[in-house]
Length: 439
Image (tube, rainbow, N blue to C red; front, side):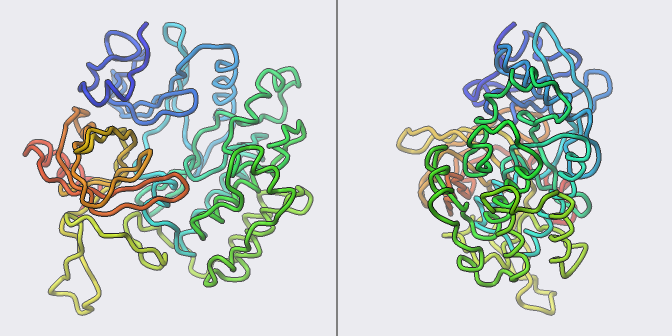
């Protein structure tokens, strides 16, 4: 069996004929189309069921060590217990040629981390929409005996809406409350595989008594970042643990005065260092957040930036607003080219020859948003290689950076296409029209 395709192969070869888990480009009865994401120990592909044609997301570990296998089995067990809105849906799981896999329902949209990279922070209404949805989803997890332990923006997916917009992903380090202690000991080391800024102090200390209040803390950090564009404590494991002991985070209202006092108080209570001082259940937190909502039924606009207090250096010209001549309100706009959420891995080669790996999170026939290892300077020319949204074929376009933003290591750059084939532009246009009918 060959290794999973790397970003090198994604950037060079079309899928599914690219190097993959086997010579046929398939796992069991699923045909691989393109590499969607790379996590700490697993790859996620867009794939198609060979018999039904259904498009799915397929996750496979990159190695088969006993600890990796145990974590994967833990994720399968966790997802088998949790169902309903706000939790990623597992459709299938199994093993092919000695390699485990999990199949998820395909989602359309973008990650919360990518949204924050582009905007810097969210409006209060958007933050509450995220918070209430995640709290309700985590309450169901906890009721089923599952502690997520890795709540953070990169594990949250936001769909185009309306309806169920917010989905919690990645249960790879979840804790199952009724497992024997021997099973928990086998994967105990994964308690330090989370991102330290989002980990509760008891998780940083590898406490065996971690419970649902750790997820309360993780959700609190996520809400803090949505509102302020920052995390309460930044750094590595030791740095964050020391800051927990020596300093309190800056209050939300001190960083962003327009946040309602009730919401600021909810976030502050989530971030208490001692678990007994936090909300004692996710249901209690969900109720507290719901009480802060002034306009039920709010829908997150994946593209709008109004009310965030954040401006780009410059907008991609291809997506610049154009006034509608028929609008009674002169402040209403439409985009030159409608955009749609679309996630795929990509590689940028700048005019100086430097390579930057990352992912696309938004595309239009005139440009795209790239989130990578670093931002690209405004005005810089680059070649971008990525998989097209319908066929999965890899294309290369010439583009120019029109804006960039860096938020806690998430580097977002808006590119305008300078050279793109008619076929690629047509495919993107068709995809956007399907995803966002009416523009």
